[in-house]
Length: 79
Image (cartoon, rainbow, N blue to C red; front, side, top):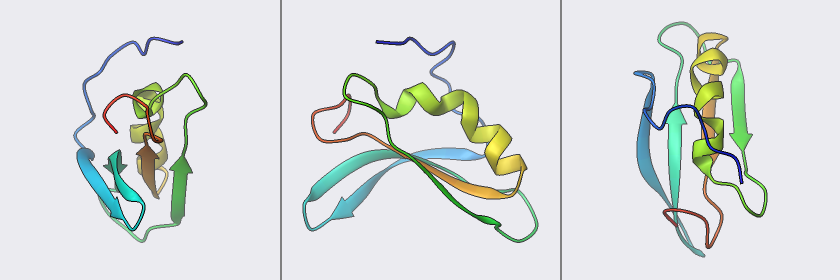
């Protein structure tokens, strides 16, 4: 299992819950500060990972104009 260099979210991101018919999933949601959204990048960790593995990607992708959603799968970290 990897260890991210930091667990602090960048200012463009928030931690929240994604509510679905199959249950609630912990997620990080990062959005561009300005301009149109170019698309959504959905980041899904592997079997032994978690959404925190993607913290370093949130800000660069949001700065490039993408909404970025990183989710924990069932049984991962906060889900």
